[in-house]
Image (cartoon, rainbow, N blue to C red; front, side, top):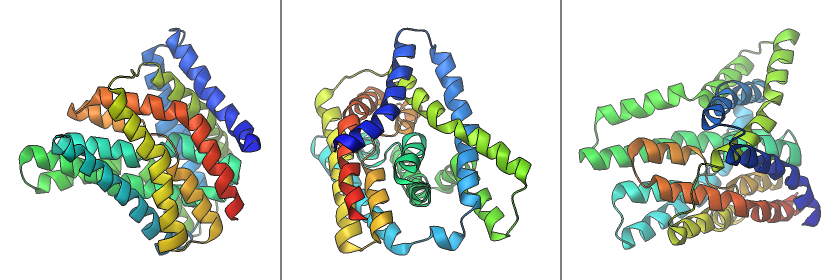
Amino acid sequence: MIEIFLKTLPFFAIIGLGYGAARTKFFSEEATAYLTKFVFYFALSAMLFRFSANLSFGDLIDFKFISAYLWGTAFVYGLAMAVSFYTGRSIEEAAIEAQCAAIGNVGFLGIPMLALLMGDEAVKSVMLVLAIDLVIFGSLIVILVTGARDGRMSIGILKTVGIGLLKNPMIVSITLGLLWSAFSIPIPDPLNEFVGILGAAATPGALFAIGASLASKSAERLLVSGWLSFCKLVLHPLFVAIGALVLFPVDPYPAAVMIAAASLPVAGNVYILAQHYGVAPHRVSAAILISTALSVVTVSAVIAWVVQLY
């Protein structure tokens, strides 16, 4: 546990550095927004393209893996929604809270950190987790919130979902990489060097951006945010582990990566959605802040456990 904690500490130290830089106003909110945009559209996309271009579609698709992760995530998602409804929340609020409970910071934190801690081979499994989060649950929240407001399902909702997926650079870069691989196109050395250098900026850039963005978050509604953080950091990896180890037995190494990915703190893009729809942004803000702070210990504990599986 201590050894893993020490290995994860530099990652969280960079997050802390970003937080300090923004908190002291040395790094402005505008600077944070542009750094996040650089990482999201360029550095992380280059990293994802490079990894996916060296995979085949067959390597990426593992139905047991997909079933196990979907089961665990859907269980926690449904549990969080049920608790929200029990406490009198609307469908929109329940959907946002469920997103906090089950969707982690896989893109900005998971891919760079787990690749370094568990090896480059981990990226294949992390990308599959990311794709499920974005395509399935990213679409679900739009459908739930928009459908609740319109009072019905419509073609317009599906169009919104489709355009949103097409505009997401993570989905686009993974798809382009897989297509490149499918046609067995060799990556020219200059292009390989280009995406390699650009992708190398993803790890420090993403971690610093996470920290800087946390500086503008507030810890309000602690009871609800604490419950959502507990769901994300404890219940999500627990039920994903049940899915991967018991219900849909997955090979030890990808199962370990999947569980580690499920242990990550609440994703920052949930706050963007909450702000966009005007649904509980302060609650989401607090859940991101609390879960990220606690994940310094919890993520280390989960990784220390799962590395024993393989």
